[in-house]
Amino acid sequence: MKKLWPFLALLLCLTSGSGMAQVCSTLTMTGPPAAAPSSWISEGKLIGAAVEFSSNIARAAGVTNIEVRPYPTWREALAAVYRGEVDVVFSANWSEERERYLEYVRPAMSSQFLYVVVRRGDAFPLNKLDELTKLSGAAGAGETYGDGFFGQFVQKNLKLIKAPSIDKVIDLLIDKKVDYILGYENAVYEQMMIRNLGSTLQILNTYPTQSEGFLAFSKRSKCGNLVREKFADQLSAAHSARRYPALLSKYREVFNESLTRPK
Image 1 (tube, rainbow, N blue to C red):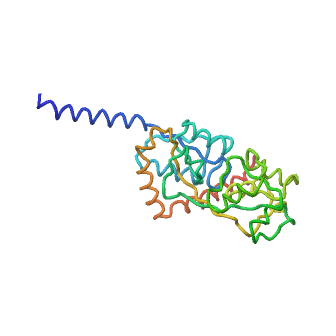
Image 2: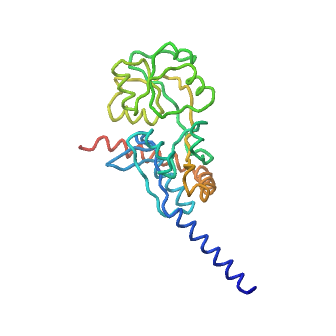
Image 3: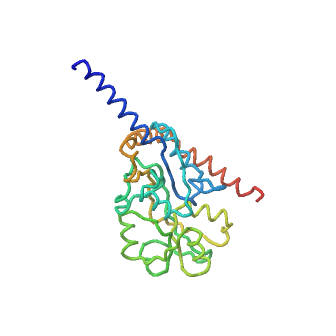
């Protein structure tokens, strides 16, 4: 009987390893659908620097099959991850509320400024955040600004109209329903370029905050505990090689070129 124990232990180990492989045979991912050059939807697919970067991180962590799922809005993408329909979300800012549903991978994968956008000719000096309390503003549903000073200021002092997507937020500004909008730089950049809004809108010179974007696993994901630490190791290595800035440059060209192609 004693001779059987090594064999049984090996069999148990192999069975356990096979189970782990089956759990993570496919890793699903999603992210913002309108935030070029980081991520945007093209011909029904979610593409961009964050998509390629996150996929490369996953492969380096040992994941063989990756499925990237596009959703019409950022709010819907987050909701899918919260429910566990998707394993990983990329470019997700941190907040205490989101951490109820997400396991964040550190270090952060990226960062971007928050823009205050106004109609051209209606710019105002933003020397103090209190200037925003005197005006009406709008922002995207599902956006968060963290739980730091600026995030608390928004929650306590600003009554922002929420729209389902960044294009609808911008429509509120163009239609003079609000005086300003808040939008992260990639989302604003995409809309300004697609809709040729350079002569219609302008971005204030003062950026209220800069937010980090993270890779984060759904707490309902069966893969999170198995590969999250490997993701963190690969993120650190990728940052040392400055891979994400290189991908941003690559996909900015891809996005800009797509705007000049015949429809």
